[in-house]
Length: 147
Ligand code: ZN
Image (cartoon, rainbow, N blue to C red; front, side):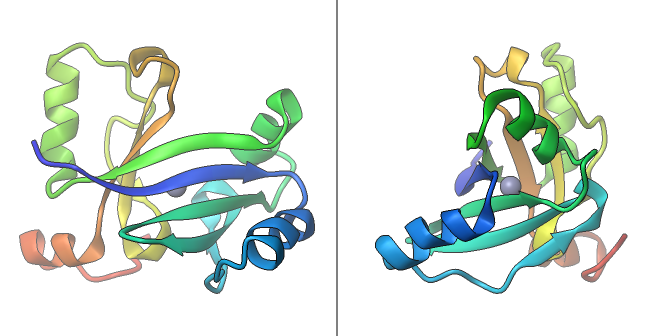
């Protein structure tokens, strides 16, 4: 299997403080935010070479990001690997007894589909797998916004 580092997710407690660091102090460009309703989160992508940082801001108190920040404080939340065929990768992981958070792909940011691997099976790292919308269109003709 081939995988490309897509982005690194960073859970943020206070977006203004995060922007004061990443945008104002570091001088990075922040893309327009994108709401991921299924995860009750607002994602602010920060392009960094071929990959990106994803500043994650909770939009509800029961958001997984709000729970994470409440427990551990802000910080590194997940890494995301881009794959060509997410369903095939999930089948392979299941065959290897890997503990998955998502058994099947679900809608993610930018019209992608995503699935998470449980950190207990990934050496303490929450790993998100993503398949981009272009790859989806290539495989089965689906278009963006399939939630
Ligand atoms: Zn992410």
